[in-house]
Amino acid sequence: MKKEILFEIPGIYRDAFRVTGYTFGEGEKALCIVGSMRGNENQQLYCASRLVARLKRLEEDGKLIEGQQILVIPCVNSYSINTKRRFWCIDNTDINRMFPGYDKGETTQRIAAGVFEQIKDYRYGVQFASFYMPGAFVPHIRMMKTGYEDPKLAAEFGLPYVVVQPPRPFDTATLNYNCYICGAPASSLYTTNTARIDTESAQQAEDAVLNFMSRRGIINYRAHGGYRSEIINGEDMVSLRAATSGFLQCLVKPGQRVEKGQLLATILDPYEGTVRSELRAPVYGVVAFAGDEPMTYENTAVLKLIPEVE
Amino acid sequence: MIRNTLLTVTEVGLPVDEKLYIRKNRIESENGSNGRRISIVTGIHGDELEGQYVCWQVQQRIAAHPECLLGTVDIYPAMNPFGIESVSRGIPAFDLDMNRIFPGSEDGDMNEYIASRIVHDLEGSTLAIDIHASNIYLTEIPQIRINEMSAERLVPIAQKANVDFIWVHGASTVLEATLAYSLNSRGTDTLVVEMGVGMRITKEYGDQLTDGIFNLMKELNIWSGETAPVRKPIISSDPDEVEFLNAPAAGVFVKTLSHGAMLKKGDEIGLIIDPLSGKTLYPVLSPCNGWLFTVREYPIVDQGSLMARILKREIGGQPQ
Image 1: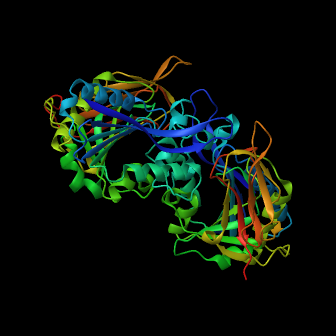
Image 2 (image 1 turned 135 degrees about the horizontal axis):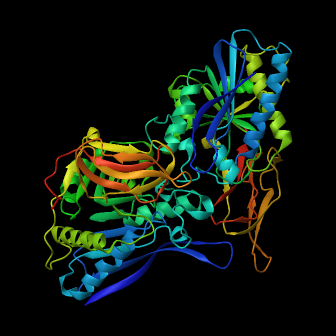
Image 3 (image 1 turned 90 degrees about the vertical axis):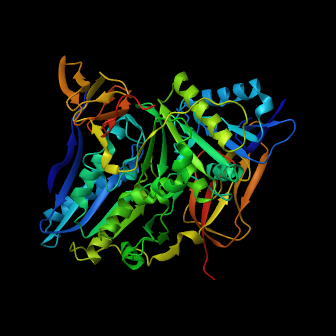
């Protein structure tokens, strides 16, 4: 294992800002894994740190295949994690909206450019990603429909689902999208949580990345079997929106199978405790996402279902 | 006499004892409107307040000469009321830049739904003007920014708006999610004004733009009253003509020159200083002759923070 500083800029009153990378093996740049990119992505950092520890042991045990190099970048935005700000501290910009970056541009463009320069030549990319809505997701791989995507490749992680989604305008400035443009298939790996640590889904993420590396001939490892992934078109997911605002009580968890018509959530009047509205499953399916904020706004998606294939 | 009608563009129920309203004031002559409509929009970014004064000033002038109003003036002072009332640029509860969610969606979440209703309400305006104030970091000369895809149609209109500068910029996929892009792509001409600085009101710029708005209203047959002469703007559509000055190091930027200054190569625009050591880290010198149309207002800089933009053009004095 080689630990090195990949990018650094001095602070004025704070310690220097550093992006640190851990390299395992030498040779062809096989796989790059990026952990947290935003200040609230504690789970993503945790997943990456577990992977560093696991790869270190595998390297010591001679389980890395010769000529294959793996890079793990646990955190791209330590400044924001340390100050509990989601985005860059001074100007509130999101590094994951700055790719491929610009080395003569603004600070977060420079960080993006510095990171992208280090990872763009890797054959595959994985990012431990987070969803912008607070809640819990069933672990899955998400790929953008860029014309280059390969869902079968994503299925090699062995997670229950692979979701393929067309990019929205802002997606074109994300790390994932730009890796594709550079010819490196990139997968966003979603675990259950973002700000809170969930060890169970972190373990699943760790196994999934090892599965992928094993199947791609990067490590010599008897992988945990995993799932035969179901490939889903993101547009086929069913969003359930709160008809009213109020206290949200979700009655189901991600991964749970639900019946058509089943009561999934209630929204309560915050003054009187009465039920303002209910959300029932419009289809048979599996809960992909369940919001976990105590309050919901009107018209906000609080549940997403993967409909059962007939 | 004029008729003011306060209208709700959209409303959404909030969790505890409150509704979120997007409101507009529709101003027409009591004798009715000729159907021409100008929409003055501001407050998409909650920290940009320059447009607040313009909304008020436009109405003051209409009220002073109600007999001159021929068409309809719609004033939308607060597209992001959450942001304005919590000193926040984005939509606070969602940490979301509102100008990256247009055209929204009727079936989307609360913010997408609001965005969709806003676009629906503005569509069909003869002209919409979306007033911004850069951000809290930079001060800008009054200018209109136009996507190159709309330049042919919008530059001739923008020239009548009494701004100092028209900047035609390249197309960007990310900017397709702005209100202006959404409206222009639907055939509603929309100008984006940037002027002044975030969290402040620069009365002089507000008056200047108000003059321009009345000039446009007259051109569009919405207003028949007297209008002030407007200045001829500098127009730039060559990306190589704009020099960006980014901080070479973290420190405290203290400006020497104000925006609008004419520069000679080597002129000191400001200094990056280190208050801890008492040293001057870098003098910020102009790399070219030109016009300083953006300068940093917020002193703390990281390496890479934007300090200035210079139009690399020899201009004889201030643009008039």
